[in-house]
Image (cartoon, rainbow over all chains, first blue to last red):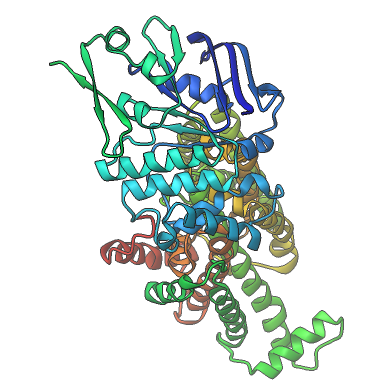
Amino acid sequence: MDVVLRAQDVRCGYGSVEVVRDISFTVRTGEVLCLLGPNGVGKTTLFKSILGFLPLHGGRVVLAGRDLSTWRRRELARVVAYVPQAHGAPFPFTVGEVVLMGRTPRLGVVSSPGLDDLRVAHETLDSLGIAHLTDRSFTQISGGERQLVLIARALAQQPTLLMMDEPTSNLDLGNQVRVLRQIRAMAAAGLAIVMISHTPDHAFAVATSAALLRQDRTLQVGPPEQVITAANLASAYGEPVQILTATAPDGTPLKSCLPLL
Amino acid sequence: MTATVATETGAGAANPPRRWHRLPALTVLTILLVAGIVLSFAVGVTAYSPQVIGSVLLAHLTGHTPDVAIADDTTIWLVRMPRITAAVLVGAALAAAGAAYQSLFRNPMVSPDLLGASGGAGVGAALGILLSWNNTAVQLAAFALGLAAVLLTYAVGTAVGRGTESTLTLVLTGIVVASLCSALISLTKYVADPEDKLPQITFWLLGGLDTVTIRNNLLPIIAPIAAGMVMLLLSRWRLNVMTFGDQEAASMGVNPRLVKAVVIGGATLMTAASVSAAGMVGWVGLVIPHVARMLVGSDARRALPASALLGAIFLLAVDDFARSALTTEVPLGILTALVGAPFFLLMLARGARPWM
């Protein structure tokens, strides 16, 4: 498996304020890294720094073998795609048009998408099982559908790394399951995925590795079952939890995290 | 209209891949505009047949002397032609600039004077009239100060808003600059001679195309409006992406700062040129893009040209009304407001909110 993303002793923050430091981890093709940690600990800052929205304060981010700072915006967008939290839009673009926007990094600087781009957009919608939404207005579909459309838009960029910011937040149980199933399928198809989550269960469900960012700014990275333990979560979030284990009907082991009130 | 669009898109849903373009709407608008132009030459105090109009226009365009009475030649070539051309250019420019700003600032309530272009142009014109400059100098002053006001907004807004929410800072700076311009206009009015200059400034600000001449008013605005239109049309696809915000646009490979600079530059050239020739003509840039989006959808690849065509048709119709329907000519800015404001309320009341 190829290394897609490698962070080495990364330090990052806003302006002159340093939020996190000494961050190191590696993501390979087909891997899902789930980033966990309390609110305000710097998950989003780290995320935005890897996406190139914020300059690094120190250390190195290597993407597909090349230092992040040497990537041009458009080149970067062909390799890394960003899936924001599901949100609205100021104008009622159709779902098809929104997904077509994912083709932008592969167009000339002043050109518009052509028939090939339309084909890619449609195949992407099809692969996510939401082709029926193509002509619906992005502002009128449900939150879960919007999240899937934003994933489709990112996939239309044909990236090798997908950065997902809380992909299951504000979704009902059914939509959470659909998004998680999609994440697993995309990883199986060879994408490298980094996702922020507030739900340890989701890391158990889809992640190949978990990264826990604590208040003391230390990052613990490893297999989910080693990182997401009752002791680690209690120390990271400051509240006692218990990890339960069960077995799915098909025999796969299941793990879940429950708060002790 | 919304129903037609829905059936058009619904029909193709079964067999992908297909074009999401809906070209017929643009073709229909183009035909309407051409018909409107022909009609505008015919209507007025004197009515002319298409043959007379055609022969006069053809003669001038090919460098001959037209074979009609001098009075008719003057009316068609020197009075109606500049006025019709100006109405088309100004209507198209204001509506396209408004549509582009609404996408760029992710806000459907935005109009082309957002960053102070009209205010600055108003200051330039008021100052020129106060100093008894000639028609051409007043127009150039209006154009120059329109550009200067937006440049000031952009420079201050970018300097102050370094960092995250720079768009919001830009909009707020625009409000400050526009209000500063309005104070300066009031100041020139206050010191102007109430018998002579004050009414001139007031009438200029109300907007109108009744004094447009080829050399003085028309020729200077063609180049900036054409250049601005090209800049906007080249940015049309990136404008779509920009409606998702700077960070998401950047994640899709767009340089938000560059798109902002090009679009603001283009829209400002168009708005300042329009206001310099026609005065403060409001509502076109705010209302027309909404109608255009209702007809062709949100995609700027269609919404931008549709806005330009509709804006041209609208201003042409309003100006035809202004010069032929009433015994005294009512200033254009008053008419566009009288039509635009109720129409906007009607759209709100009918629930046809294209931004929802």
